[in-house]
Length: 506
Image 1 (cartoon, one colour):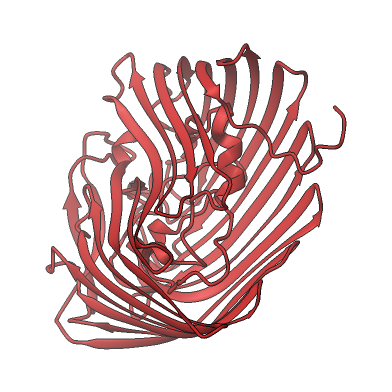
Image 2: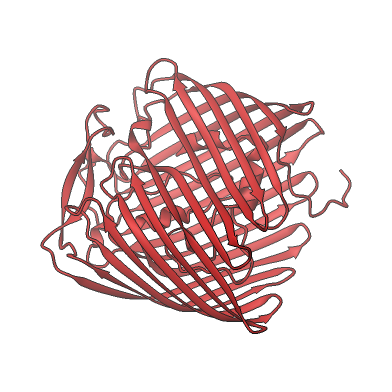
């Protein structure tokens, strides 16, 4: 997980941290499924102000533990090339919003082959009939871990891609009423795990514009999930109905969903089996395959019904300070949650959790953040608590907790410094695992520091140091690692800190 920090080049990481948690305007259709989930499209820049920021870096780095082992550490020199960008181009006919960061790592002594990692979230809207009928194309790309119980080396990753497309219909009924409908075809792709699927989704929302800044609506959604591999997966249908209230004030945003979700699964599994997937190492032998757990069993249909509740609250306490809070409980699945991943304070989306099964699960979560921004200083703190429970398959249950902290300071017009830290804990409480295969409970900590020097309109030189530690409750998979990178960047349009307190003098 620590390798992902290379994605956060100094020029654009602040935009990541700022825009990834922004909200869509009130009245957006949202159903909690796939990439529509959690109060509008996540991970994308919003608002009506055009924005284009981009940059690229090349550099060299050194790690003192390239295989992430607890003993017999091996150092390695790494060459890196990374590119990042933020696009927000609203328009009446064409609306483009995208956020991406990609890194290529070359291990010069041959510890691994070239490693390409990154995250992309992009959406294009084209108005077939302006303000009435819009065609939408959305894509989310990133990586997930293959083995949840061992360190995240390059051999323990797979690419995941979720693409969806379809029309949005927006009709006004009288002066205050509205009717909105969407239809989507989506495809979820996993490079290694056997969870590829095709999805059909339709939503309908009818509501009232209570004021210029508030709406209330009744919402319904239906989704059909069809897996390509039906040996280890079971097709299912998901239906949701809920009421929504949204307010977008000058200083406060508030959204509340209350309702329920019903899942009808075809041929639900009653047991588990082990499916061997090549390409990722165990702790003791880097060339050996790993085990991916997938649900199988005698076919019989099952139905699961759960309450749906989501709350989001944001408040600008002052021109320089903002807090936000979110909490919820909903039925989801691995592909849907992948598209709704949120960036934390350090500004990057880390690898998605290992998809142990394609079955639906109940996610109960709470997250919050505090941000302080002045002319030369920014402090950002975020945290998340989550409990995932699988009906009838408690062996997949997962508890996770995380905290991220970023402090950035402009020292002079040319120099800036940054401190970052993160803590991430996972626990599979109902899995009994052989210690030789890893640990069901792990703790990952990372601290880092960056000093950047900017010269002229495009040149930026950064020196970055990171220390990470991975501790486990059983086995010998724990490790410590130090990395240092020197980066030279081309950043003609480097994003800068937002300046709500712009009147303050440096």
